[in-house]
Length: 326
Image: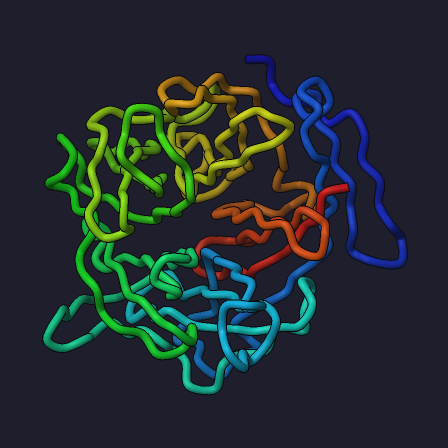
């Protein structure tokens, strides 16, 4: 794979918006994302055990939740202990995002179900059959759990859905995102793309489920670190112009530990068996030249436009930012 080269970038002088085009994006007719700034940061929050918020998951409440706090809900968390799954809400995709007054909505202790050092990494999907929001999260990193809610605020503990025992040689199985997608030959409605730590190398793994509670897994990785990197995580399924892609953050940890993350994209087949690396779809320097990372993307169409929410900044000092496809 040729190293990604930025072929055009435009700085809007009276704002913090960049439009970034990459060679891969142009050749594959992929969307070009315009960076639009920070939408949530710990310094503005009441519940902020660390100067850090990560892993945004955005959900549309319209026609799903009765009398919601806002048109859109965003779930997020601090990274380190004690963590805590938190909620913010807004009526516009760019915000202003307001913190739910009683955060966290899920804590590190939930008797009698678990008592862990931290909870983090939330992802949400609406279950149409049950008319409930399913929220997936981890704590510790070797276990992914599920909670459900009818109002997006008050949650019922469901079960443990994924753990490292379901894969060979993994020490972590977390940071999963769930999508409605039917795999050929499988009796499923949902898939999960999750991070697995295989003896020090983080790769993307696959699980599938019919009801969102009971999951089966594929032992081998779906996606290895892209060329030029040695770690990858935070994957999302991205369907675009009749093709199937996976987007994830990746870096070369030998060059810079916990820095140097960009968002990479690869094209895959309907069975999610093989991923052809295509390079970077969004670079960390699109935020500002010295920005060390863009991580944990979530892609969602809001008000007729493709929005991407993601982490920026240094480890344990992350903020949540937004970009919009041109």
